[in-house]
Image 1 (tube, rainbow, N blue to C red):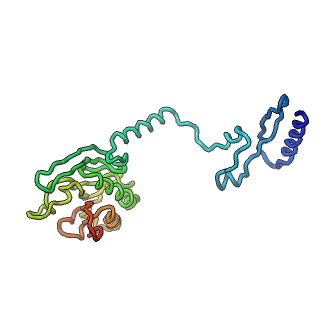
Image 2: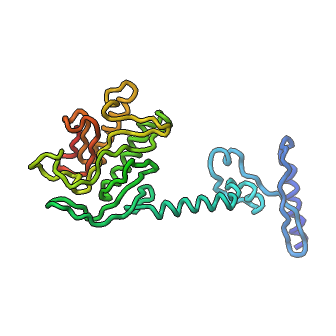
Image 3: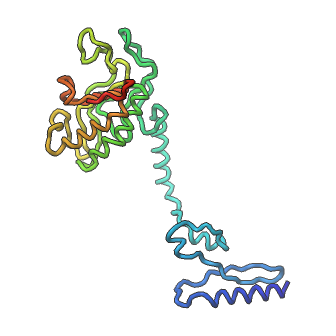
Length: 266
């Protein structure tokens, strides 16, 4: 056993001798117990290129050295951790449609006062992906999720460079038991089924507002509004705007009706 320890020490000394003299970092060592003999041996450092270019897949030869390479930050103060936990709990508590990004209240059955109206499993949405609604809006979960997709993929990016970004949607209409465009004798609107929302403008984080009516042809807002209008085609089955007809000059109409021929966007 002693002979083996002597050989081990000789190898260790040789390894230390081969270390580059230009290194300013002291060698890392570890004490190894061989029977009744304690031997101090060097710990192999991983190639710096591996640490720079990718994860080190090889197992470190020392738990001490492995700990020194850990990139995990130290634990956050308890107060900050508690605030983060409380925020996550609040989001879960206010979530609807099984999605913490969709905040609101469960409504359940909304009976229609005329045949064709009503919502089976309605929710009342107050914010989506951190974007508030100027009035809490009743809809079904399919419409709420389509709204989330549009906000994340179109509305937020389109307004990211304006006034600090999007803060709230100006809601002109949501659930209402009525006919299309309130025309007598027309079919029941998708609003009457909880599958539609009308948006008349956008409130920025700076407090500035962009209206669909004035912004559609505005020099600094037209591009963003048209991008949002186009981006709604797909998440929603019907997209109507100022170019569609006289009923939609001042707002976007989005609904989740589906057609065999694909989305109807105008």
